[in-house]
Image (cartoon, rainbow, N blue to C red; front, top):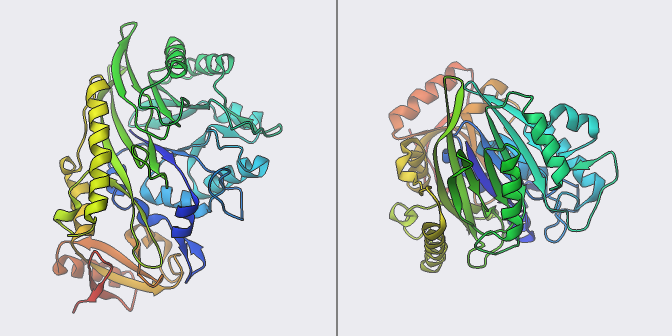
Length: 432
C-alpha cells in the first residue's frame, strides 16, 4: 500500500494548469515523476483537499477545482480518494455532491463524505480486497472550518461515538487490517500535539491497526510500534503531496508505504518505509507543471533541470525532513527511487530521452476519437510548449524497440504513425 498527503489546488496551480490553446486544465504532468512509484503499489490512497464545486474555480480559502485534477490522480495510479477534511464543505452541498459525482464518473473509489445515510450504511467502512487480504479503510476530519452542510449529506467528523460504532461494525466484516485516516492536528507543527495523541490512543483501543494522518501541511514522524503487544503503524502527518505552499517545510511531503502479509489466516504489517517528495513549479511553456519530485539527483541526467536556487530549496526540505524523522521516527526507514528499477528507468527516460511512436496530434488533451478504446492504456500524451498535444505509445530505450511497437500499432489498423525521439525539454524529433 501507498499513502500520500494533501492534494491541494491553490490559485497559482490553477493558473499554471490552464491551457490557453485548448481552454482546458491539465495536471497530468505534475505526477509524471511519482507515477512510476505509485503504480508499483497495489493500493494507493490520496487525500483530496478540494471540492469539485463547479466554476468559477478558486483556491484558498474555499477551494473548488476542475475535474481534471482528480482525472490526473487516476492517471497517476491512485485507487482510493479520501474526501473528509476541513475543506469538504467549502462550496456547500453543491461541492460535496459535485466531488462525489466527479469521482464516481472517473471510477475512483472514495470514502469520508456521503450523499445520505443509505449510501454511508452500504459503503462504509470501505472494504478493499486485494491478493486475498481484506482491508477496511475509514476516514474522519476534526472539522470543516465552521462550515456545515444540510442533511441528508454526511461528513465524517472525529467523534468518539461515531468512530467506536464504525470500528465495532468493522469487527463484524472480517477485515484482516483496519486503517483509519485522520485529518487532525495543528498546522505547521513538526511534532504531533496532544489532540492527535489522544485520538490515536482512542482509535487503537477500538481495534485499528494503522492510523494515517494529514492536515498539518508539514511532515511529522512515523512510528511502527507495539500497543498492548499488538503491532501498530502511525503516520502523524504526511505533509503536502501537491500544493502551492512554498514556505520552508511546507513545500513537500511523504509517500508512505506498507506491505501486508497474510499467512495461516493471520495478517501482519511486514515492511514499512517512506519516500520524501518535494514540489517544484517549473515553466515548460503554456503549462507550468507543479512537479512532485521524489528525492533524486535530477541534474545528473538533465543539467539545469533545477536551477541552483531551486536545488538548494529541495535540499533544504530534504535535509530538514531527514533530521526531523531520524530523531523522532520509530522503526521506519527512508526508501529511494534507485531501489525500484522499473520506476527509476521511467524517471531516467523523462530526464534524458526515449523513443516512441507518434499516434496523433491534437489541440485537445482528450485522446482522439479515431484511436480505439482498447488501445488507450498504451497511449500517453505530451504537452508541447505551445499548448498542443502529441499522443504517443511506448517509452523505448532504442529505435528498434519502438519499431516493434509501431508494427503492433500498424497491425491494429492505425495509420499516420511516426517513429519519434522525445527529449526532456519536449523537443520531438522525427526518426526514420
